[in-house]
Image (cartoon, rainbow, N blue to C red):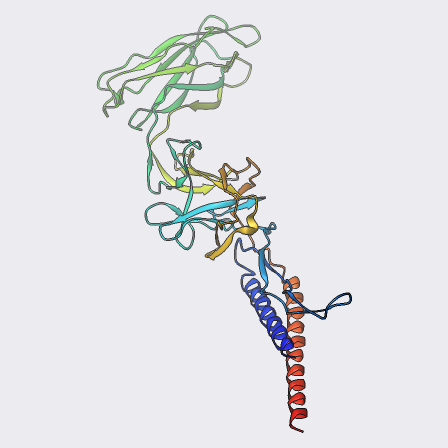
Length: 410
C-alpha cells in the first residue's frame, strides 16, 4: 500500500516537470532561435514479489523526465534589419562574454555596441573574423568582429580612364566634339579632364587633345595630343594601342603627381567609332574614387559583413563564423538564447558558413522558434490528464489506508 503513495507521488512530480517544460516552450513561442524541448519519461526499478516462475513485479514509479532539445529548422523570417542573420541548416553562431565564456546560439538578431563590436541583444560578442582593407583572413583564430562605424574610406587616385563614344562621319573639317571625365587625385580632390576631338581635312581622321585643367596646377600642363584614324567601316585603325599616359605634375592641393592611361580599347575592341550618327558619348569610366563616409553595414547571405560607402563602393569588413556539433542534443541551455557544451558534447568544429556540413547564412532575416503551438497544447492536455489520474491513485491509496486502519481498530 505504501508503494502506491511513492509511485503516485513520482508520477505527480514527473507530470509537473513535463507541464513546466511545455509552459516554457509556449512562453518562448516568439523567441528567435528558440528550440523546442521534449520530455522523455522512464520507469524506475521494479520490486519482485514471490519466488520462482510467475513472480510478481511491481514498479516503483516514474523517474524524473529527461529533457531533449529539438534542433529542427525554424521558419526563416525576413526582418529587413541589416545586422540580422539566420542559419539555414545545421550550425550555431559563436558568442562570447567575460563571465560565461564561449557559448553557441541560433538567434541572429545582432547589433553594434558602444565599442563598435557586433554583439547579441544581451551583450555577448559575436565571434568571427574582422577584415583589414577589404581582406579577411579566415585561417586565423576567431575573435570579436569590429564594425568600423563612422570611419572614412581613403581616396584612390585615378590611374586609368575610358570613354565610349561615336564621332560623326558627316562632320565637316574643323568641327569639334568635347566630352569630359571626372578624375581624382591622391587626396580625393576631383578634377575634370577634357577630351576635345577636331575633324581633320583628311577623310576618316580626327585630331584629339586630352587636357588636365590648368586652374588645378601650379603651372600649365601639357595636353596629350594625337590623331585617330578610322577605316571605311568606321572602325578605329590607328593608334593600335593606348596613347599616353597623360602626365600631371604640380597639383595645387599638394597631391602626388598623376599618370593617367586613356584606354581606347575594350580588350581588342575599340571604344571609339566613326559612324553616320551624331557625335555622342555613351559611357565614361575611371578607376579613382574620392574620400567616402561609411553609410551602412549589413550582413550578406554568405555571412560577410559588407560596409557600404557614400561613393557607392562596398568593402568586406568581417565574416561570421559557424560551429557545427555532431550531437547538439547534448548542449545545455543557459538562457539568453545561448547554449554551452556539456561533458557529453562533441568538440565543436568552427569554420565558414556553407562548408563542412555547416548551414548557410541568410542576411536580413532571423530564424523563428520551432515550437508548434498545436503540438504543445496536445502535450499539455496529456500531461494534465496524467497528473489528474495519478492524483486519483494517491487519494485511492489514502482511502484504502484509512479503511485498513479502521479494520485494525474494530
